Length: 229
Image 1 (cartoon, rainbow, N blue to C red):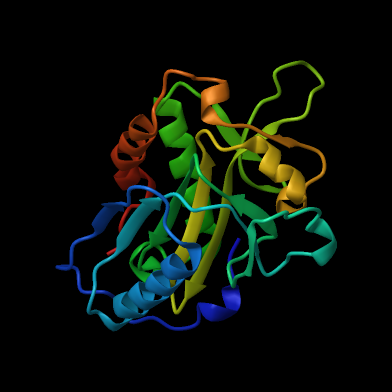
Image 2: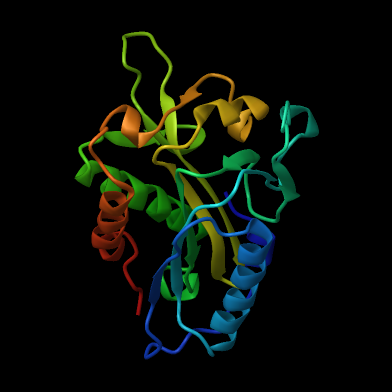
C-alpha cells in the first residue's frame, strides 16, 4: 500500500546513475535501515544517487502502517514496535524473512501508484515462480498468496507489501517469508486480515536457499519494472 498524498512532485533521477543492488549479511537494525532508506530516497529525488534495491533481514520487529489499528497488536512480547509511514497495517519482520527495500524513481517508471504496487506484486510472483511456487494476487487483499492446500481451505500469505512514495520516489517495499518463525505472527493480526494464514517458502520447497531466492529476485527484476521514457 502507499501514501498517495506524498506523490505530488518529482525530480527525475539522471539516467546515467546506475541502480545499486545490495545484499546485507546478518541482521540489520530496523531503525538504522529506516534512517538510511530515508536519506537515500532524498538523494534519489535530488539526483545525487542512483536507485537502490536492498535485500536484508531484521531482528524481530512489528511495524505499523498508516492503516494499522492498535487492537490488531495482540502480543508483541520482546519484539520492537515501530510506527512507520508506509501504507498498510501491521506486519512482522524477523530472521529468516527476506526484506526487500525498493527505492525507485517511479516518475521514470509510469508515475502510476496502482501500477507500481502491481509491479511489486508481479515481481514477487515471478521470483517465486522461478522457485517452483505458484503464487498469485488475491482480489481485495494486499500482498502475494499461495492457494490453499485443500479444497475449501483459506489461502496463505507468503509476501507482505507496504510501500511509501515521497515525491514519486518509493521506499519501504516487501517482505518474503523464506523461513521465519511463523509463531511470531501470533503477535498481530497480519495486515488486518482474519481469513487467511501465513506460510514460508521452506514449508513447500525445503531444498531452496535464501541465495536461490535472491538470484530469482535479481533475474526477474528488469521484466517487472520497465522504464517509461
